Image (cartoon, rainbow, N blue to C red; front, side):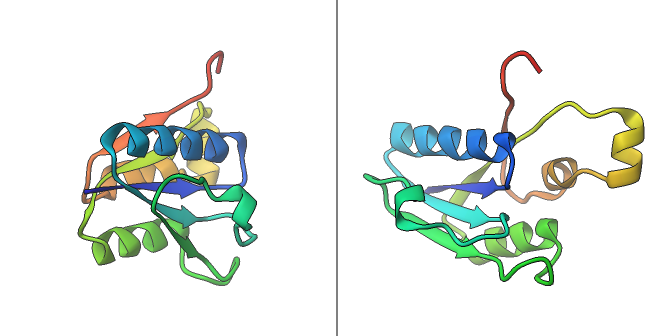
Length: 120
């Protein structure tokens, strides 16, 4: 059993990481950190006290973020839940920009735990 988290360069991504760490600690399991940011995680950004596997993308030219996450979930059969940070968006915003979180919620082969910041 393991917890996966898709981390983006946003407040929602940081909240997802914090929530995934708490979930993994509560379950006494490892963490698969799927890095969707445009930088590699440094050692001080990786949670300590957990078995953490970091999957880095190689930048904007790498796979679509949804495809990258689904591929990693398929490659890591031990993962039994995915943690995502979400935020409210307008209908127009969803239509123009799409939503990585929405696509992951609909396509994930494992249950998805979504977290959002209070007051949003």
